[in-house]
Structure formats: structure tokens, C-alpha cells
Image 1 (tube, rainbow, N blue to C red):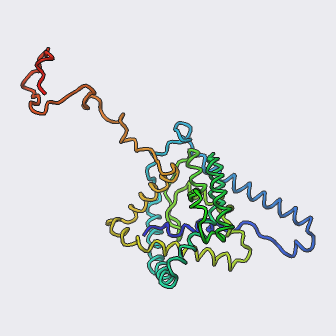
Image 2: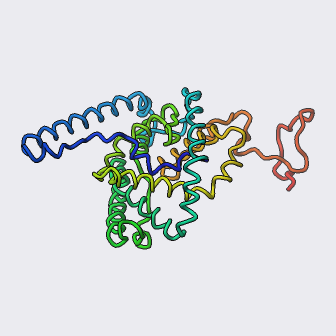
Image 3: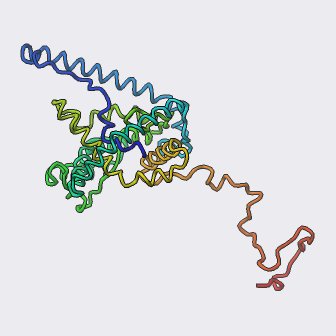
Length: 323
């Protein structure tokens, strides 16, 4: 099955960078607060510097394309295939013997309307990530719409358990920083399969860092609650995918790894272009040989096709044409 069943854990994969000492806060609040903020800013600058350095090689050709970058020629690049296949098998076993049975029990116990509310709750938690990346991609109207959607569902919709924003003309959208990098022209880079998290690439892996800071669950101080919410999100997502597992097994054929890899790249490209990706270059009209293609004025007679042994007449009266 596709490893995207752990999408709710993606933002929670990074190690929490900020640690707060309660005793220090009580003893010298002014001095220690300033010191903590300096350390936080230094860590954030370091993370942003690393992200910027990693994205530079991927964006080398971005200025020669459109969109900010035409990513239609992004073919799966898998130099780590031997490693990725090992992790892929591990993830498959993890799902088969642990996550899928838990999800089946969850699906059996909870009624479908309750599961739908839980799904809406976790989708609503992604609202800040969507809004920030809308803005970074220059989608100002969508930024306003998604902000309104998040506010309406967080209040009237009771923390997202219900979706009153959709009937109001505020549909959900899917944005993250990996997509933003793609819009900016950064290419996908090498394919990577992460333990538990599943398929990714270098661009989307870098995007996990800023996505971590826009995911509200990561700001829950109690670690038990924080990890409980993350695990619930993973199990709920996996339960939603129970119905497509058998279909995927049949569609994947003998090599499920290749199927998932190709599906992942196509899915991400579709998201970057908001459902309207450019056609591959081999389907462009310019790729056909004009010398063999019929010209716009060429016509073929349905009854008497021309043969090499019969030379065509040099002139033909318009009155002799048969229809």
C-alpha cells in the first residue's frame, strides 16, 4: 500500500528544537528569556541556512523554465534505490503487522461519521500550513479564502470537527512548503524513502522543516498529548485508506516499489500545478517530425489512395475533382 498513509506524522517527524527550562524562567525571567530567544533565533537561522544551501543545487535550472520553473521534465531520480528498497520493505512490514491491524480495529470500533469528524479535525490543523504557503506562492485570493476557512471551521465548526466553511464556498486546499519550493522552480532531486514516513524526495524532505513550525500540534507542551494526537492522526489516515489497499496491490503489479515511486512523483507534480500539470515534452507538437506528418492542406482520397508506381499529375482541373 502507498506509504502516504502517514501524512499526518510528516510534520511531527523533526526533533523538537526548542527546550524551555521552567526553573530558569522563575529565577531570572528577564536575563534567561533574552538568552533563550537568542538561542532560538540562532537555531532558526541555522535551519534556514541549511535549507537554502540544500535547495540551491536543485534550483540550478529554475530560471530557464516557466512557472517559476517548468517541472514537467522532472523524471524520477533514484540514486539511492538499493537503500530505498530496504526501507520500503521495512515500511511494508510495519504496515502489515502493526499499523494496518490497529487501523482495522479503529475502523471496526468507531462509526463512520465519527471517523469523518476526526479526519476533518486533522485537516483543519493543516490550515496554518496551507495559509502560509498560499502566501509564499503569491496566491493572495486563496490566502484570504483559506484563512477564512480555517477561522470558520475552528470556531463554528468546533475545532474542525465539522466543515461549515465548505457550503459557504470555501473548499479545502492542499499546500505545503515542498510544493512552494516547486512553485519557485526547485526541482525534486533524488527520491528518498524514509522509515515510517514513506516516500519523499530531497525537495519535500527539506520542506518538512518549515512545515514543522506551522503545525499546531508541535506546540503542545505535554509530550503524552502531543504524541497521542500524532498517533491518532496516523491511525485515522490509515483507516481511511483501508478500502484502497487491495486495489493498489492489484494495480502495482510485480514491483510495487516502482509503482509507488512513479505515483508519488505524479501526485506531487499534480499538487504543485494545482491539478493542471503541463503535458510531458514527448507529447508536445514540436516533438513530431514535420517531414513525415501530413501538412494542413494535405488530403487523402478515401477511394483511390496514391501509390508509388503512379506519378501524380502536374496539374488538375478543379472540375475533375470527385467528391
